[in-house]
Amino acid sequence: MYQDREIGGKITSKASKLLLWIESRALRAAARVVVDTTANADHIAATFGLDRHRIYALPLATDDALIVPRPRPPQNQTTGCPIRVLFFGTFVPLQGTTKIAQALDLLRDRTDLEFIVIGDGQAAVTAEPYLLNHPAVTWLREWLPIEELKRQVAESDICLGIFGDGGKASRVLPFKLYVALAAGKPIITQQSYGLPDDSPPIPAIFTPATPQGIAEGITLLAADARLRSQLSEQSRAYYHAHLDQTRIALRWHSLLNSAKT
Image (cartoon, rainbow, N blue to C red; front, top):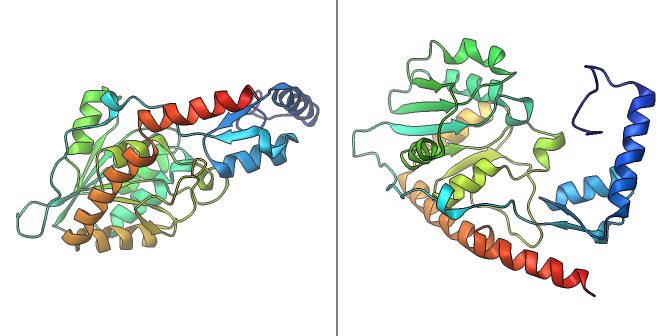
């Protein structure tokens, strides 16, 4: 609450200090604190005055049956079908949706690409001018059932991550990337991101969090069917090796066993 929310639109200095004290006290009282990435663990320790060794960075809880869609072979340059690029997520600064919209605008003359954009939110107003009249963009602003979202992911060739640049965006591994990895999808995302404890870097194309950088990443990956195929295999293998339900259960068993000692 202290770092992510405001009270009545503007948090006062006194209220801010009180909220920080309450949350710091609550967190220091815990035997173990669980977060999602090591970067967030470092941040929480520094912000709230916690001992870093008491903070564990575990993967987000997932249900493989809900998020793993039927795999679809990557498109290549001989099928005649456009390469389908998918973004899904809430339109908030962390996602970098305005930058994504501007990147798609830079690619509006590419007839070999099509873009599916799923989501809405507070930052949609700044993205609208670039998305609404784009000839290759389909923008689905309504809430989609999980089965429909799985279908959209399965039918995509490239999935876009987040491009919020610094701050919170640089400390998270968003759930959308769990979904894309589970589906075996080639990913384009920003260079700065977080990871759970003992997790290696994800397989992805990393770009600067700028419209030009995003557009160049899409162009590079769309032109290289072999690279898309390699990333597809690596994504699925990474998810099962580090993020699936079995791995999460093992991490929690380890955490609970350590709490007994």
